Length: 331
Image (cartoon, rainbow, N blue to C red; front, top):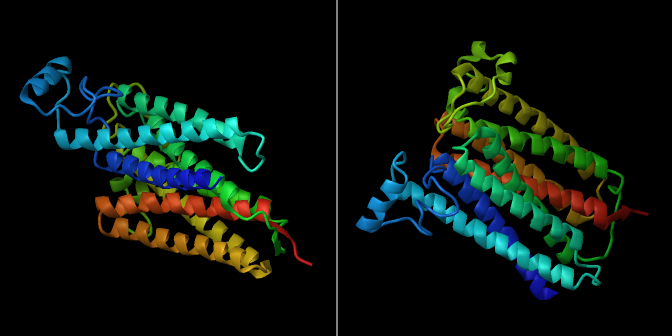
């Protein structure tokens, strides 16, 4: 059982790394660094020898081999493949020991199914030339896998001792806030998939806010052969980004309101600490988001913004877990 916990923890860390590498691949415009899948120009690695490069160019005459972008894409695939094998291993162990109630068999099986679908989305991301709906789905799949792996780790690691607390009736509140946060992450993915970030400069609203239009949001990226660098008009991308900012405000207010309510009624230090973690990560995320716009979207800071979104999601999953599985009404 101890080994299972260690593997579950390692899986969570690896999933966080894969999500971050996926964000870096997207932000560095390396999503089509390899025009095929799962290999790269017909090879299991990036072709480097002169003869291999010539063969690659003959096999894919419409693509230009850029070694740096190709390696970024392949490193992401290698780590994602390792994560898939690790989840398959966890699933086999859980199913073989399903009589041990402490092992969340259904959760691990769901993860195994999700990782297969995530692999398919990774393939379609390349074969459909970064179609935004597929790219956003791939991003959400990565976040979902991280969230479920974190929940699995909490399930097999946390003490079965119940916490005496007054928050046991607030699970629906926390779950609702988690849904709001998930929508915000999806909107962020839609911004990234459509390369809409640089189209809304200025704080707190876009410099060209007069171009914002709800109607333009229904201008969908469809019917193109290649979606790299985006295909939507300027006003649509500005509107997409601004909606992301507006929902960020909704998300922040929802989290602050929830945290205020829960912290006031909480008794245990464990739960109070979990609430403070959520608030702290939110404040960092808001600061980073503002700095990104002010500094004109630097890559590393934007990458950190993606990572903090993942950590905020995990912290909310932990908060929901504590309410659902660890808390009972204090006497």
